[in-house]
Length: 263
Ligand SMILES: [Zn+2]
Image (cartoon, rainbow, N blue to C red; front, top):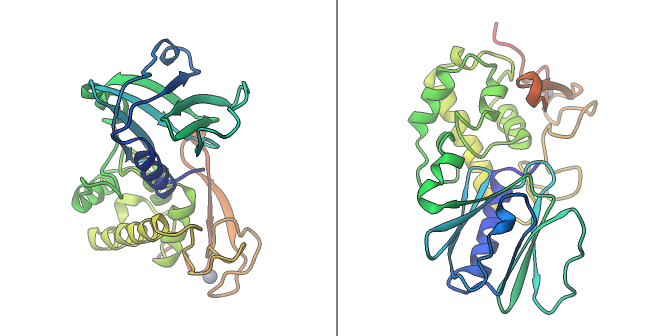
């Protein structure tokens, strides 16, 4: 699932291609937004907000998208073959030089820019955003009644973390993913969030997301995606469990020894 760093890179690429240029094509293949055609409108900016993408147009409109599980925006030259009429293609936006094709998007909305809060106003501080507020995020975690991993994944506490960076940050900090978030002190939670932010920021600048420093396939993570393989620190077999509320079950990898419950 795309995390904050993937969305950040996507927004940066879309901004580079669209900002200050008029749209030459606007095809939103989604009930509701499909009635809007912004051909001729100039893009003001494309910005990430947690895992949400906000494509703002001059004139006060925003095209909002979310990648959910498998979504992506692929940028190609306008003179490349046009995208197929495939059901997975949910949006096509283009300038004179480039076309961006939204594949398997999880959400697509059109709102007045002034009303973006109705879509992203519930989000906690954004780990990669200009509004990042460590103290506020720590306070939200400490007020949570969820286990630590589930609280980190809840975008209302803080925005931008998915299963990979949650698992990796918890491992590096040696924290039990199932301890109640409220049981940890503010310094420990602050250090954990600073760690997660460093991992995300480094990944924004890297072509291949990595927490170990290695970009070789299979070597880029400490625990994520490594179920039944030996922990890189202690050799204990990495475990995978589900976390989060029943309707939003997420996978979480951890080392039962390095991240043992505090005694
Ligand atoms: Zn271990």
